[in-house]
Image (cartoon, rainbow, N blue to C red):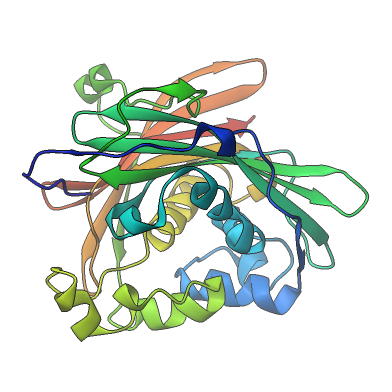
Length: 292
């Protein structure tokens, strides 16, 4: 994520839009859609490719229509050209399976004004039609160079990378490559039609060097790297998975996901991770909690 050099613009946010659930969004999970998403993210785990169980970041697909609706209730529409996906934090109660009939809703819980912009925290709940909680997600929408003038409500849970971990070598290093056609495969599999990922001219008109990869696709890369190296390729063991989107990723990029063990408690092992392109960290503050 890049910040602009101009002075932040003072904008009034609407506090009445906080803690208001959006309308329910429904989604039917199929094995075919699960397999398409796995293939679109270069996922090597057979159970995901075969559509038997969904990969972790597939959890964004059923909630896609609901997740940004609460932002509109808080931030004025004329600043939406400045919004980027800042962070994503999944809390899993169980894996998504084919045949699930899912119901999602979202609400803004608060916003935080910072020197380079304002972050709005969105809480998303995904349940079965019978009411079973499948996952909770915290999405941080960051408005570059927008100053809300104050901080209100609750922010997302922290998942900051401990720099002291760098004193020890990572327990796993996974090389990865973003294919030239990655965005064209990911867009239909995820349901994300944003043209910055699909149209070179639109991306350049927006001031970018060219088309950018979806941040959640890069997050999905990191998820299978972590699962295959320290999770036994078993998505059912993953309890939490969080990142900050630090820099843009482009088709053709060579990436590397590095994983450090933080510690174990109550039958869960915590790992920190990051994904890099050369010297650039593209996914930072990575946190994964895996049941032993």
